[in-house]
Length: 201
Image (tube, rainbow, N blue to C red; front, side):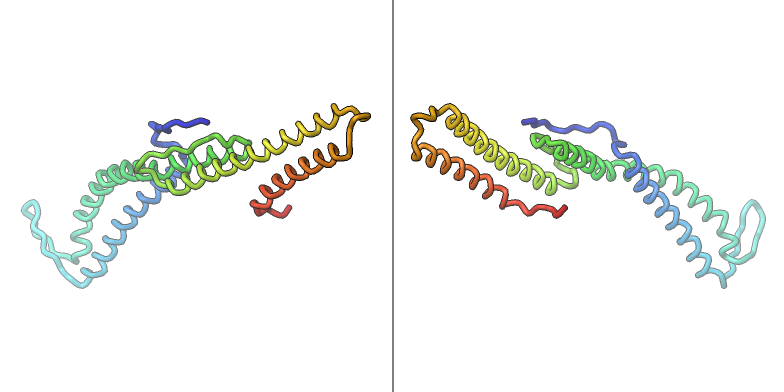
């Protein structure tokens, strides 16, 4: 059974997924800046502002007078804050993208018939509950497949035993005993099969 601690150093494991989330965070911040500017302009539309700058006294509507300063402040916020948000979003999305990548790989292994893959996530990763459930599913399914394989081996042994019997010395009791043993193994296989609810084709 494969058991290893899965370490990720690449912060862009699922580029499409993480790229969309990072872009969404950045656009959300940009939209917040734009919304703040619109609200400020709407609330101060009926006010006048006096500005004294470079030995020049200016009088005008507050939104127009503050537009240059607001744009300058937003530009600094977009560059600095945007960089911080991109780094933070990259770290946050990595905690989601990494486990999704690991779960997808484990499910692909399950589809291909590999049930020995143990999903190991880091302590702060999301999805630890579903990883534990998939690990438990693999353990239970492996146990039942081993039981079915054991029953199949017993049937093979009984069939070999029957085929090597001397027809002249075989008794009805011998045939009945082998038949009952094969039927018992088959019932065990059917009991295991009944524990599953199958998808209708």
